[in-house]
Image (cartoon, rainbow, N blue to C red):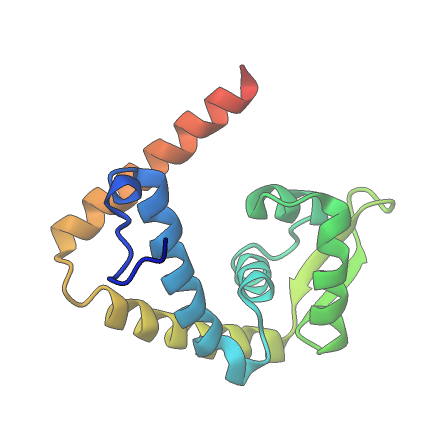
Length: 153
């Protein structure tokens, strides 16, 4: 039997996870579009933004912040370094360890990309009040914390 009307997803819309997924797909699409002109993906922008904000960050720290396996991070760092946006160098404290720093070009690209992200986010959240945004970000942090606790059990 073929459905001739618009399919009904009410049963799924009652689940927060489904709503989060649908919202994430829309947000990801918009942010991906905003970053295209900088030749950045969302993950490479995120890595660059964290490196700019934390000069001397170790790759292991960056992987943890991005919730990635360190081995999965290497390709993204290679791309950023090849583009001239970051540098990897030996740590002054532990010569065996690497540290990450943004180049001047990396800081400038990050600044412009951050402005583009902020404009896109404002366009997406224009109908959401500041109070609602605060509730949303707080609720998302609580969900993340609760999910992390469940994984530890």
